[in-house]
Length: 251
Image (cartoon, rainbow, N blue to C red; front, side, top):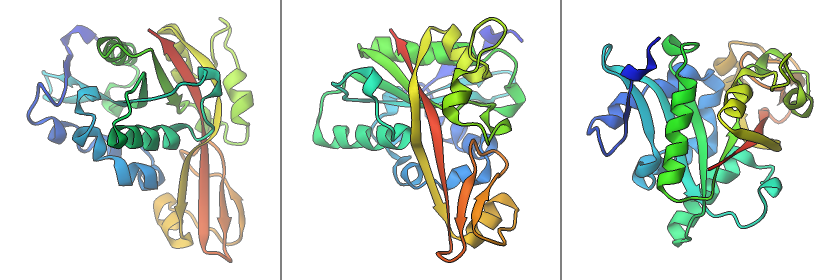
């Protein structure tokens, strides 16, 4: 596919930006991933407070968004090797807190880069990452950090993320395709953030989200999850704690 035809659009360049991207999350994520409390409580902040950091790749031929990137600035004065275990949740909450307190940011954090399923495998990952890196440079921020959700880890839910992130292919690059794309774009793996996202729900909610039954307490492998989730029948609560991988793009 000729990726040159795609246009980078932003809330500033398209008045209908919100409508263009509205349904993409529902299309790309497993149902249970749409019930993460930090995301649901704060997603509006992306356009309310950080509109200058949102972008999408628009397909003018088909008049729809093919890819989207969501990010924000935050303050981090420690070494990048010390980035928190909280990963995605920490970054989102920290960015919102920094903004409300008037703290000057020095780091750019992308929490999501997604490709519409109809465009996956057609070379859009690299130009989308390039567009996000351009924002980092334009905003004069020190680096771009990303709590990466490896896109093939769900095939290996019983392997630890620490092991998985260390796997290599025949060329010595990361085994995972999404980690590999970022590596080729100049990023490096820093560490695993073991508690990047936490999703809680009742037994009935998890059964609705996953179309599964949970007859007893224990660990369950669910479709689309990177690691097993834990169901406690007595407490009527299922918990999924997702690990991600901190990667850093030096700009």
